[in-house]
Length: 357
Length: 267
Figure (spheres, each protein chain N blue to C red):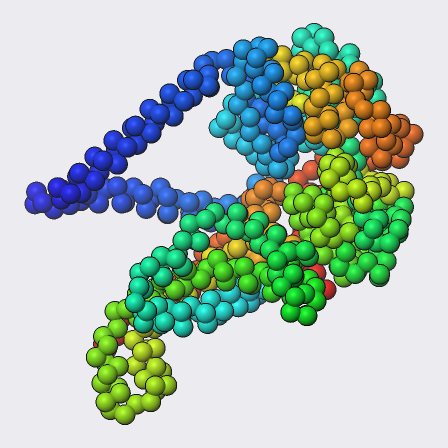
C-alpha cells in the first residue's frame, strides 16, 4: 500500500513538472497570450516562412493546424472544440458551411489588397459577392503521366485510360467525387449528375477499369508517382505541378471531355475568437509579393493577378496550370449535392473499390 | 461495515470509468445505428448491412483476419517454443517486442519503400533471378505487413504459457515412451492452448477492423469493415451507417471472446 501511494505521488509530481515545462515553453513562444490566430489549412498548403513573416509584422502568434478532407474540417469546426480563426475549405463546402451558419461574414473594407484578385475568381456562384470567402488557390483535376515509362503515349481523353495495354498502371486518388467524376465525365455526363441510373452506369464503367488500376491511395500518390511506382495518376493540378518539379518525365493533362475546376477559399468560421486578426491575415496573404512567394512554394495556381508579375514567366504562362478562361469554362465546379446524394456517391465508390480484378 | 464502505469507495473510479468510457460509448453507438442519414429513427441501416455489398465486406474482412491470424500463429508458435529453449530468452523476447513500440504509420511508410517497384524486396528478387514483381498493393503485401505487425502480440501469450509449462510433464511423457510428435500433440499443445487462444483474440479482433494498412499497403484493393467505418464517419458523414457496422463488429467481438474464452476445466 505504501509503495502504491509512493508511486502515485511520484507520477503526480512528474505530471505537474511536465505541465509547468509546457506552459513555460508556450510562454516563451508567445502561445498563451490573447493575441493568437489559429489557422486550419490543408497539409503542405502554405509556405511556413510566411507564417513567421506574418508573426513578425503583426505581433500576432499563429497556431497552425492541418486537415486532409473538407468533411473532416467541417466536423471539427461544427464541434467547436478549437477556436479556428481561419479555415480554407473548397467551394462546395463553403456553400454547405454557410447554409449551416458556420461562417462569419468578411468585412471587405478591411482588405485593401482584395483588388489584387483576378475578377474571374470573384463573385462565383458558391458565394455571390464574396460575402464569406476570399480566393486562396484554384486548380483542376486531371491525369499525370510518365512519358518515358509509357514510350511517348499521349493522353487527351478520359477514355484513353481504358486502354488494355495499361494493365496495372494507374493510381487513383482516394476521393469519391474525383473518381466517380472521372466515370461520369468519360460517359459525357456532368460531374454533378444526381440521376441514379447515370451514376450506376458510371460505376459500372469504372468497374471495367479495374484491371488497369494499381491502387487507390491518399496523399502518398505524390511520392508514388514521383518514384515511378506507376506511370499514370489521377490527381489535383497542384499535386501534379509539385511532382513534375521532382520528376521531369511527368506531364499533366486535363482531359477534353471536361473535368473538375475547384477553388479553395479562405473563410472565417463561427469558432473564430480573433476576427480582427483573421482579416489582417487574409489581407497579408492577398499582398502581391506574399502571394507570389506562397505560390512558388505551394505550386498550385494563384488567383492573385498582381502576384503573377512576381512569378517566373514559364510558370504563369503554362496553360496546363493556368488554363485561359475559354478552357476553364468547359470545366465544372462541384455543387453541394446534399447529404443523400453524397452518400450515394460514396456507396458506389465503396462498391467500386470492392470490385476485384 | 466500515471496511465494506471503503471498499466500495475504491470501486468508484473503476465504476465511473466503465460507465463513461465503456458502457456509455457503446450505448451511443447503438443509438446512432438507428438513425438514418437525415437523423430520423429507422432500421434502414440494418437493412443496408444485409445487402450484398456489406455482407461481402464482412466475409472478406473475416477471410483476411483469418489469414492474418493463421500465419501469425504459424510463425509465432515455433518462435515462442524456440525462445523458451534459448539461453537469453528475455533478451530475445525484448528484441521481438521492440518493433511494436514504433508507430504503426511509420512502419507502414517504411514498407511502402521496401516493397515498392524499385524497393529492396524487388532488388533481392532480381538478384536471385526471379525478376521484378509487383509486391506492393497485393493481397500478399497486405497479409505480410499485417502479420509482421501482429506477431509480437501472438508470441507473448504463447511464450508465457510455454514458459509456465512444467518440464517434468515432458520428461514423464518421454519416460512413458511417447514420441516427440505425440508429446507435442498430446501434452505440450493442450497445456498451452490458453496462450494460443489469447493470442488469437489479440490478433483476430484488431485484424477485422484494420483500416490504415488497407489503403497504404493494399492500395484500397482490400476493403474491410474498418475501412467502411472510417469512410462513413469522416467522408460521407453517415454516422448511422458507420455506427451500424460498429455494432456488428462489437457483436462479432463478443462471439469470438465467447468461442475462445477461458473455460477452466480440470487439468
